[in-house]
Amino acid sequence: MGGPSLFKSNFTRIAENTTKYYLELTRSYSNRFSDGVTLLATVGILDAQIYVFVEHSISLETIIGIAKQAVLKEELEPTSYQKMASQAFLKRFRAKSLIDKIVSSSEEKDELEKDTLFNFIFSLEVEIFTVDSPEFNRSAIELACYDKANTIFKAIQKTKERYNSEAAFALATANLMDSPKFEITRKQLGIRG
Image (cartoon, rainbow, N blue to C red):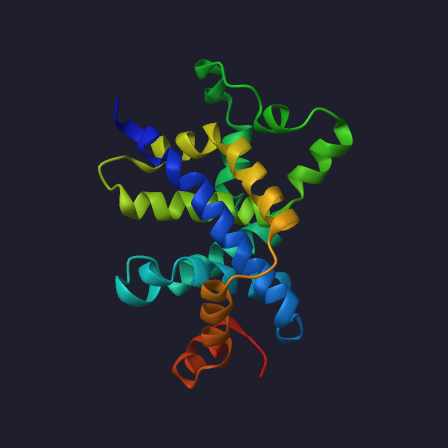
């Protein structure tokens, strides 16, 4: 066994946690974000805070770049998900189109392709797994995430439907958004007030 399949239990956890931070921010702090890039970058910082503030293995600039790719995908390099969905080599692995795995109607396909939260979480997961598993090359990690895209998408949707609030997520969000300790980080992200 081994290989990228080791990540299976973490795909859902990362998607759920990232979505919870997204919901906390949009419900309580939406007026402090000038755009979607700032919001998603803040979501990413919250979810990857150990990697950013403790280990320094993922930079603030990397997370901002992932957010820009998810929001401004036509203008910048495609996100990891978009690269994987369009690469012809996946056919060698007999993988269906990611979107075909997740949805069946053309309206749903269009909606998923434009789902910035999904694109952001997918690329954030690739980044986290790349740091956590340096024994695997990035392409293998992207392929593992691509294979679990349906799981990621469903975790995001279920969390959006069911999440009200949890103390750990609310406190971590309030700490980043209000603590003087993170004033410089908020300025770097472009958070108001």
